[in-house]
Length: 92
Image 1 (tube, rainbow, N blue to C red):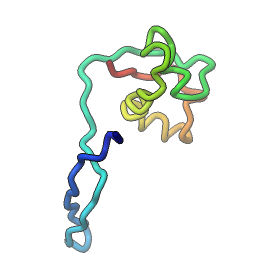
Image 2 (cartoon, rainbow, N blue to C red):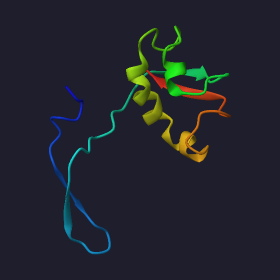
Image 3 (spheres, one colour):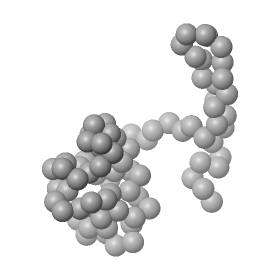
């Protein structure tokens, strides 16, 4: 089952026009209290970081969205790439 299937439609008020627009598939970003710092090293994708034993372990590629959400600003500022970043914050 997709993780967004049960999310309700919400209303977004446009700042300039002031009208309300229905938006589907928006969810609040979770907050994580515990995290560790993982060195990017030679990894070229978030999946490569996820499967490391000290991060999430084998077969954990599906958890890469957590790393992206926590490091979104750094990844976007780096041209949507982790290549060149030194560290990533990994939510636990």
